[in-house]
Image 1 (cartoon, rainbow, N blue to C red):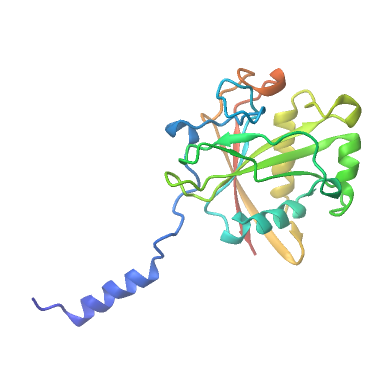
Image 2: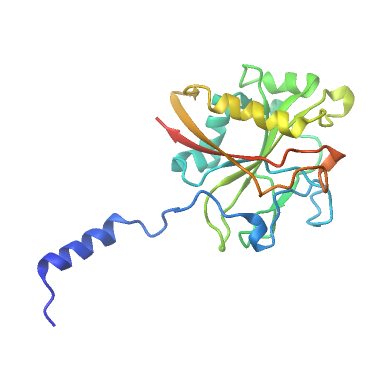
Amino acid sequence: MFISPVLLLAQLTVAFAVPHNKRAVAFVNPNLAGGSMLDDASGGSNPADLGEPLNVIISGLSSPAVLTDAGFLNFAKAIGFSTECLGLHLGGPQSANLGDGNGYVNQTVELRQDYGDSVLGTCLESLIGGNHLRVYRQNGPQANTGALFLAVSKEENVAEGHTIVANGYNIGRDELVANATNGTPSFGGVAYIATLQSLTGLLPAGSAGVNHGIATDGVTQLLTVTIL
């Protein structure tokens, strides 16, 4: 069978131009494959446990560097978060099942509001309270999107045991989104621009199953973050 050299060249061009592992979707809905948009606050991998809403998603269509551990940390610093005070963490990790085939997996990292100081600012947050987030990555064999699911909430001061403030899940989410979409935040010489899409139907509105019994409005914010 004769194959036209032009056709063969076109086929080879397509084969090399399209990477086989390219992430083609923003995320996969965890609810569709036995996962949940609430994490497990006890870390016990029990779906009956109370959980915190995964109320922000960093899209798998973001710049690939943003979706790495180091890259997300740099972006987080650009929007006012940093690692915990002196690297110390009290309490156990929470876990989440993102419906990607990995089952329940502990949080990748927990970050806190840094009040303008990426080195020591989170020590102030530990004392007076503020915004904080937990990160989970969707990368299992059934949904390897690379998307980052964030449980964001605003918490009380240390005297109140870092419980969540009234309406704290919605407030924490909205503050993070406002910082991310305000111009082109930057840190360490890297600037970002984020586009926003508000999603409903992933999380139910109300307080059923939600840790601390704090109701949410059921909105999940999808951010696509691009490095400039």
